[in-house]
Length: 405
Image (tube, rainbow, N blue to C red; front, side, top):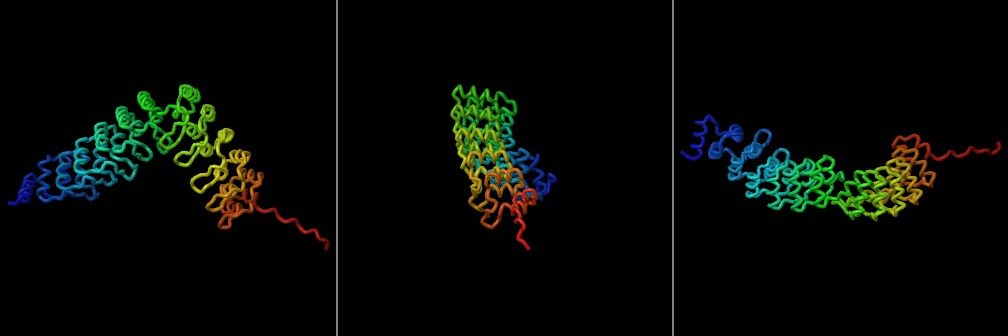
């Protein structure tokens, strides 16, 4: 009897048919010997169920390292993915299966691919799930310590869930304590927001900028004390933001005044091409903007999208008070953006902001200017169905003729 036939007979004796359904079911609790019988009987190690979930995913989800080893030795790809695009290494990391993770790496699993939903790597999953043993393993094999997932590094993911020992270890291995996520939060901020004082102290000792946190929170007394103690007023995060920018994003004018008094650079540009002035404009902080301009903020900086001036950006948002401040400081009321030739008046008209349009007209905005495709501010107001703005922009009727009969 052949090895295949012998294995099949043994399975039948165990009341197990040598087919895919029984094979996948066996991966939950059957012994390694029984699983090997299925493989010897000719069942493919790459068998999938009706949902396209592979046998080795069954093994991983059931913490069956012994079964997974048999499948890998039978030729299964160590970089196999589940239905969500997560690799076997990610599943092992999330579940804390260090021995399985090590086996996968020995078999050629790649370290740093990202899953498609959140962009997590295996290290991200391990850090977020509090799996210190896997974190140690992955870093020892060369995993990227500051890899970003939805803007968050493994350090941030560990911090937000209070995994203090993982935070310590990541810091020891060079994690950037001042990295920022897409919402401008740092690991220190996350620890502070969750009330984890122990973690706050760990991060501070590792160089996390308490000044950044104090500026973000608007704590002017703490900002002043930190500056007196020698804190770097122009320290940058991984996204290029300074404490002044953090104050700008929250509208904390008193904090900004303290920072500027201690030498904060007013025209620093972050990695998104923004300055404290443009961030304050987004926040709609006219008093903040006015103070920054008084302290030398560059009025002529433009955004990265269409080379729009600050005046255009404020007009587009309908921030009339900001528009007035910018005009008082000398912004060119009829400047055009470079792609379509639009003016601040056109942006305000498209927005339907009557007060902003009035403010621009009072300062000499030219309603007759046209874009590269021939549109005027009036056209923008009409296409946006803004009757009050349309009325402001419509030309005055010619006076009636008074010639004698």
